[in-house]
Figure 1 (cartoon, helix red, strand yellow):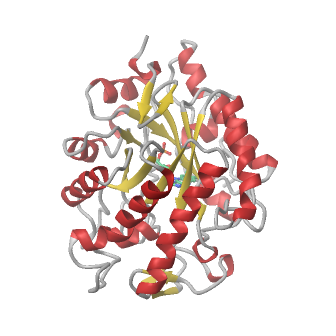
Figure 2: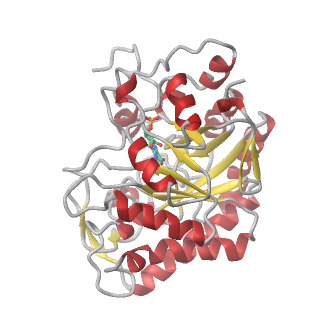
Amino acid sequence: MSILFEETSIGAMRLANRFVRSATYESRAAEDGGCTPELAEFIAETARGGAGLVITGHAYVMKNGKAGPGQTGVYGDELIPGLKQVAEKVHEAGGKVALQLSHAGGNTRPEWISGPMLAPSTFRSLHGEMAGQMSAAEIEETIEAFVRAGVRARAAGFDAVQLHASHAQLLHQFISPFWNRRTDAYGGSTEKRLRAVAEICGGLRRELGAGFPVLVKLSSGDFMEGGLEVVESARIAKRLCEAGTSAIEVTGGSRYPGAVPHIRSGIVSEKDEAYFAENALRIKAQIDAPLILVGGIRSFGVAESLVERGVADCIAMCRPFICEPHIVKRWKSGDRSRARCVSDNRCFFESYRAPPLRCLRGDGIA
Ligand SMILES: Cc1cc2nc3c(=O)[nH]c(=O)nc-3n(C[C@H](O)[C@H](O)[C@H](O)COP(=O)(O)O)c2cc1C
């Protein structure tokens, strides 16, 4: 049997195999962020298709942290019953599920949020609007909101939570020297830029206990001048694991102008795949916790070799699961041909323009 189908663990969470559905913004929630039956079905389908761990799309922990239409919310207790449907359906399918906790920071639009657009330092969003600099009190309020959201996730039956500290979302904006230009306790040295994330991790540990898995999706580099570099990111990963993080998912880049994107297109051969593997190796050398690798993995052989060579413990994919929610089952059944996803990113852009998220392969949309 392939090493990919071996059982594995993240903290106390047992996984049936090493396949992870990386967080995927589903754009299927109600206007207030509440889970809909359609959203629960969409998430559970990947668990039915054999993924050992399914990570939900980023869920906003505060109403001023929403990143797009139809995004799932986890900012209030009234959202727990809807979230329960997601956890129940994934469990019925025999899978495990983590809720990704997020805040868009300056990476949003005024019409998607209530309250002002805020970021660690003033920030020009992808859409050209300016976000203001957060006060220390606003930072503390946001840290608390992440912790309360983690408590809600557990109350709703989720097996784990993941902090979204990548792709130019708020926690990444704090970590990166490109976006964080503060000179107070939350900016400057690595330790200070990491402080908000470390305090959230500490708060989650305090509230959820030692055994509950807290994962972090971490940028391994911004790939732009003045941004986060892998050497610093590896130090951050080490520090997060010392603070009790259960697993690090390695990604990098963003859609910010000038950066290398985290969702690359043109993945046509095996050498284009696993585009953060080198950074993962640098991070793996610094941590004992499991490392999940995402980014362009499309071939069974590439995935297997990444685990066999010790680059990663788990293999995460996003776009291949949108195209083929049952790809793990297919590979397990013996059909090991490459993922059918063509990585043209039309699914991503259309999910904002004309939700809900779906695979657009072959439907003729230009
Ligand atoms: C439609 C779409 C939605 C995404 N939503 C999220 C998200 O909510 N949170 C997140 O951390 N990454 C998100 N990503 C990024 C993916 O999780 C993943 O890091 C990236 O697509 C690279 O992996 P892949 O080559 O397997 O698609 C999204 C990507 C796509 C294409």
